[in-house]
Length: 318
Image (cartoon, one colour):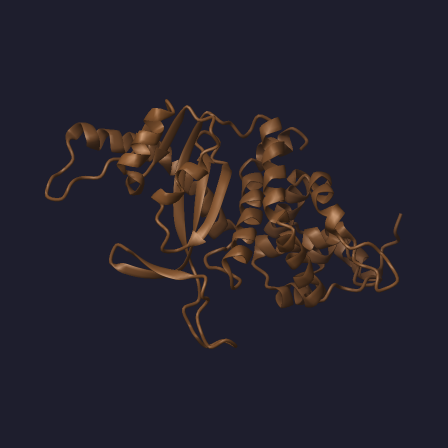
């Protein structure tokens, strides 16, 4: 067993458990580390004649802490030096280990992006939840949200991110991207994700968010188009898409009642976005480029799914 350094032994004596520590203890149990490491391991650098790479479990834990706590690469490096709890979770000892620098942390993220491993991790997590009976496939609710990108041109290129666009919602203009998701309407777990630029219509991504085994589909009024209703009818899927009122005409009492019932079902589809924004602090894109930000969304929603069902996983011993 590795002997504790003075720094590590001081952390072990800490009398009070903080909320962040409790959160990390829970995530340590519910994240299927061995399965996720198997996905990444074939692509991870092996020890050779050069500098020995950091252990893969350490780098994956650091990457996940960036998602949970919103650390940029440089900020993550500093946090590892300053915060014993984060070092402990990553399996690092300030007394004996060298901390990964921001370039090492950046390169690990680029490795995941280059080999499309974020979407593979998302699929692996959902595979586990399906096996445990936590992710059901009878009904899907579809939703989308705008994610803001910096509109400023005060950067090295002197221009805004060319892969982000602006769109109008209500009376307000937004610049950034969209996350389109398909959500299990019983568990609230995300099973499908598409990242697009902001001006892409919600309706255009609808069919790609369905897994094909649904008995019912719900969505808000933004999806009320003839082609959507036709697709559901042709595939014998219950149509729970809310209805829009026609200009100058109010909805009938029956349509209003239907929309109210649909809204109650559809509300579960908004819960994953709340976890990203409120729990993980994700309110705007963190990188330039659509692919990089979509890759991060796959990781965030995978971790968000685990967070949603953490109590069930903890009760079963994960």
